[in-house]
Length: 171
Image (cartoon, rainbow, N blue to C red; front, side, top):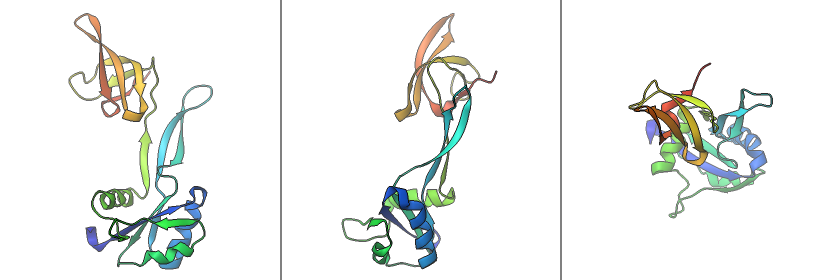
């Protein structure tokens, strides 16, 4: 555990996570987070706007300085269950704990998700084609990648790239 922090997770009614995180924090003095994600969305009339959405609807992450008996939290209205391992332990471990700690470091808010669409012009910011402008042919949002058409050797070549190495072309 990082810094003697104990991490736990509650599965809750989706529309009650805000209430539950506040109630549990007040009851026990722990830190409670409902993970959020800032997403760019296309606005009517063009352009984008930021929207905050639940990253994991129905989950509340709890952070305690000492080991806690969170099984008592079933009594909080809207809590469905306390997540546990196959051994019946409530503490998060391994990759689950690492994810919870990453959320804590980011204060429960994951950065903006870029919005790209077919036909949009982008500029490569990394890789062999850094600085080159390309046109998006296809977008696979689930995989955070896109097929682009890039000028090479006096012709247009199709290739797939990840969101991380592109940015929208500035006009």
